[in-house]
Image 1 (cartoon, rainbow, N blue to C red):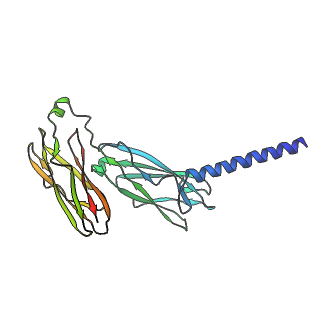
Image 2 (image 1 turned 180 degrees about the vertical axis):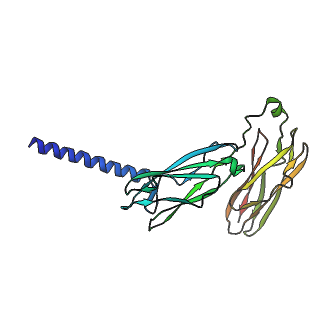
Image 3 (image 1 turned 135 degrees about the horizontal axis):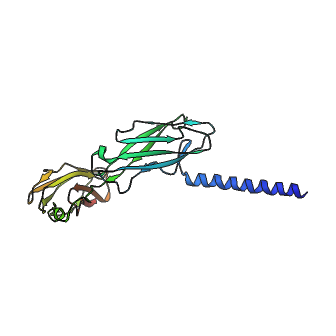
Length: 252
């Protein structure tokens, strides 16, 4: 009798552990892309610099009852992908290891790239993986003298309020800036938020004292209420490598 009770107790404990593990898996892998579950499908590579190569990973879980082969497709040349395991058994965890080469990417500021995991999942075969690092410039090599003589970006105004407008009005504004430093100022990148379009700087290389503009256009069609759009200007100013410009106002 005692033996039967002990076996029953062991069965109950194992069942509880199994249920607890199942609950944990469902909670942790909350992003369900078909039968492949993720905790996240995005990597930001925080703190990456323009001269760095950084590696990170994303875990996933095969929620189906059959093995799932995985293959990385449409991978940009500056990204390396390794999938462990290449064939994921049912009800098992795996991961994709991603190496991002910012040197080969050769850009600055916020960026956005994708590739896909091709599977045999009948619900959604291709899974999108998003890479959205903000690549900063490495100024650590600059000497005190170089920092003293560095370029300096200075805008006349960082915000433009267009007031109150009817939907469909096109807002245009030129943000003027100058190089207030002692060496050449380079505009590395100009990145606009959704619904806002910025042209490239009138000049991308400014000698000390030179002036240029960032021309911004915002289409209010389909908008209503308070609007606020931003443009991020990335430069080689070591003290202020990013400047956020804002367009704000009300669309009736």
